Amino acid sequence: MNRRELLKSGLLAGIGGILTGSAPAYLNSKTSNGKYKNIIFYAYDGLTWEDIGTTRIYKRRHSEEPVHFERLMKEGVSGSMDSSALTSIVTDSAAATTAWATGRKIVSGALSMYPDDRKLDTILHLAKNKGMATGVISTTRVTHATPAGWYAQIDWRREEETIAGQLLDFAPDVIIGGGNSRFDPSLRSDGEDYYAKFADAGYTVIKDADRLEANNADKVMGIFSDGHIPYAIDRKFQGVEGPTLKEMTRAGLEALEGSDQGFVVQIEAGRVDHANHANDPGGALYELLEADETLGYLLDFVDQNPDTLLLMASDHGTGSGAVYGVGERYRASSRMFDKINRHRASFDFMLDQMDENTSVSEIREIVENGTGYRMKTEQGELMSKALAGEFVMPDAQSHARQPRNTLAHCLIAGTYDEPETLNMGYVSGQHLAGPVPAALYGNHHKSGTLGMIDNTDLYYFMTEALGIDHKNPEMKAEDAMQYFEH
Ligand code: ZN
Ligand code: MG
Ligand code: ZN
View 1 (cartoon, rainbow, N blue to C red):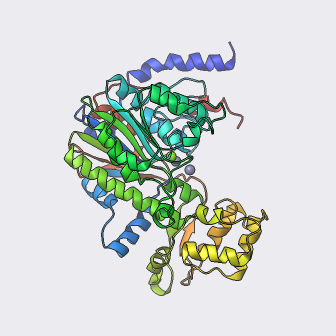
View 2 (view 1 turned 90 degrees about the vertical axis):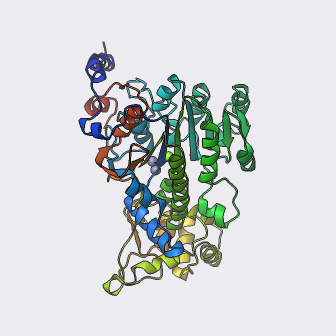
View 3 (view 1 turned 45 degrees about the vertical axis):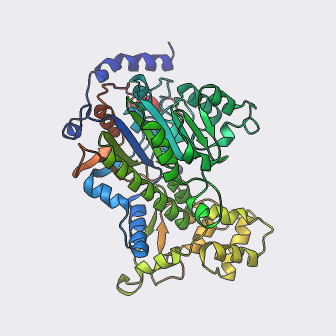
């Protein structure tokens, strides 16, 4: 028997004890023992507490209204969540979504599967076995990690064409988001027509967002972009087409709420993460505002459907953009909100209009149109070099990757006198280790505290809310480490 087999049998021998265990004792006072019919899990990808701070200050300044997130914190059961993965203190989205879906930590990069190939049952599998309706709705490709971890079991998240096949096999009732490139025969590497396969499986396939509204089919597949759904800021100001998360959410819930046996759906605000990776403050802000609008819709939905439990969590922080104090007695700190209010395009939208042949004056014009900030000539020259592939800002210094990091460097100040640009700082262009927000909201979950929970705990809140008793096998970090060289 080789080491892999030994490890496998050794671990299998341990499962019995784990299966008879129960959810962490501190959850007992907060569980609901089968009192809910429906579960809505609202996932933010890459959201930090600082993002919430920025969004609420912006919204109060510009509309005098609080963010819906404040209502969730006040009226729901809320707290902080540890986001770690099995073999790393910083998680990727795949291990993070698996923790929610299965109650187990795994190695980053995989979806609901251990490195010894053991598959984990997800909350969507368990719900389906119970006869419930299921769904995934996301602003990313529907085959991207966060939704995929709830229906697919695979060692490597990047194999999205295979994941599309697992989506077809699992067949949730509602599939809404981006990702045409994984289903369209002219874009798939194998030339297979996955839309035809989904249609054969009983789906109404929709590619025009206007038709989403009028749809009343039971099994819906709505795919609205080749890749991710375009950034909210570009849809709002640049005429880029695509549905809002709230529109996709409403259509999905209308299809699901007819289920007699109830439903479990994951809804993802997936692109906060992408804007934060890019250190793009305007891009992130409009993703956050759209996500918050969707959260308000979900809170209202739960009020009208009291047999529904809403869970909200971020999978990990990314970035993270934080507003810092500037000026005498910090009094100039808030003026950056007037500057960020002039942002009209994502970094990606601006960079798509530039290449190594774009002149410095054109670069300055594109950035001014996109952000309201007139770059200095030297900054335009830096951008020109970055676009030509020259090493301008090291990734570790300005955090995001080239050439976005140079753009971020030009638009974000880093001084404590009041700057012309934004008084925002980024720690990194990567995921972060710190705790993230989590909350529950429902008839049996009102005005309380979660304290500090683990990402795996959310699985137990869901299973207990639905009266499901199921534990997945466990794997120890040191055993998982043996499958990797470092
Ligand atoms: Zn993530
Ligand atoms: Mg995601
Ligand atoms: Zn990320």
